[in-house]
Amino acid sequence: MLGNTRKLTRWTAVLLALVLLAAACDDDDQDDQPVTGPTDETGTATTAAPETSDPTSVVIGLEQELTNFNNLTAGDNLLAGRQVIRAVWPTCTRTLPNSTFEPYFCESLPTVVNEDPLIVEYKLRADANWSDGTPVSSDDMVFYFENCNDPEDDCAGTAGFDSAELEVVDAKTVRLSWPEGQPFVEYIALFSGPFPPAHLGLDWTEGFQEDPMLAAGPYQVDEYNPGSDLTLVPNPTWFGDGPHIDEVTFRFISDVGNLPLALENGEVDVIYPQPQVDLVAQIAALDSVASTITFGPTWEHITFNTATVPVEVRRAIALALDRELIVTALMRPFSQSAQPLGNRVYMNGQAQYQDNTPAEFQVRDVDAARAALEQGGWTPGNDGVYTRDERRLSLRIRTTGGNPRREQFQELVQNQLGEAGIEITIDNLPGGEIFGPVFGSENDPPGPPGDFDLVIFAWVGGPLPASSTLQVFGTGSDSNPGAYVDDQVNDLLIEATVTLDLDRQAELLNRADALMWQSLPNVPVYQLPFFLAWNDSLINLEDNPTLESFTWNLEEWAFS
Image (cartoon, rainbow, N blue to C red; front, side, top):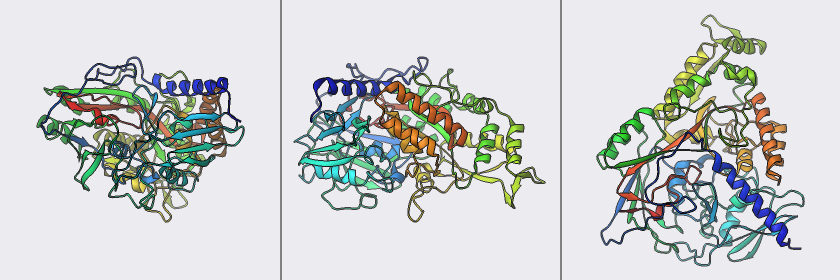
């Protein structure tokens, strides 16, 4: 039986409230520089593109390179991949910079057709086609679903799909249903990852590693030179307005120190590096360059491999870290109000944020760190490094090589933990190359735990916290690189994904986070800003501090 209007309105209100949670994640003191052009009520730039017959091209300097055009696999779920493929492959909806959703390849936002059991309909646009003329269809959504509805699947996010059943309504429409009393509250975000064409019959993981094969979005791939660059050109089957740029080239420059000179010399027109103090200052001094720093639901952390770093060592590390010093050195140059992050779900400034950091981890305590190790049976060696059962407490820390801020972060960790008798060796790979081994792509079968002891990177969040947190910390998730398992945490996160009451959901998520401070899958350190700089003759650029990132409206970019 279909739900009545009152019930459907309640579901709409719930989703509206959910997407507004993340809209408050910016601290009032962390003001963004205004974007080029006026904005409408969604906050998106709306300057009309001037008419021109001259060919136009844009070169974007990217710090990392995509590792697979199918960005939905667990080991390839990089922001760098999303930045490229989102203009090529379809998504049902897209997230705007203010953390609200709008239909993109779907005719409308997902429609609730029954409340309990929850049944939601996803209907693709009639005019959405692949570049070979084949319609973007229900088959593509079935392909997506069938590769993401089991925790064993090679999929970056199975939450929502794993408890659902799919029904094909027609060639453009599918419905998802969940068991009675177990609604998936964040259904609006399903089918929102750029998804590949099903009709080619290619393998989900291996079939699109070096070639997206087809396009449905505003652009299609013209040429890809791995390790060097990738070029997009307009897709003639695109149903929407634009694009206004005739050629967009992504140039992969892992050494971010080279980006300011490349921008100054006109070798690139747009850069999106992780912010470094010197780099931001250099960019600010350039003529004819606009820039903005944006804070969103993105946070940097030290994640542990639970297979190689036992809990007493994780606890000792948390005690020996001086997070205040790290934040002062790395984040306060961008925001004087930056604080150590005490939550894995909510950001500083959100109403739901609680600093769940236990008192023992609030202030660095090297003596307590040593005591924790000794209680775990570790004894200091002659060189001061602890040992147990002939194992020397020497751990590898990894991150994206070529990123000066992260490399400085590593050095601070190395020095701080060394004072507690924990030897740290640095073992990086250039840029995004690190994520394959970190997420276990070299394992047989592929999957966590990855090849690391400690790793520093950032999780890029979105407006719906429950499913993304389950994706990162859920038992058996391929997006859980340290193979962390905590049954209590897992149960709380699952309950949060089916909880309609938003206050109750926040309570569950904060309880889960508090428990994680005991079992320590990682140590959250700070909220990470994004930095976008561009040739100021370009219009309609606006950062989007969610998974959509700065290329979210690439088809609207133009030269003034």
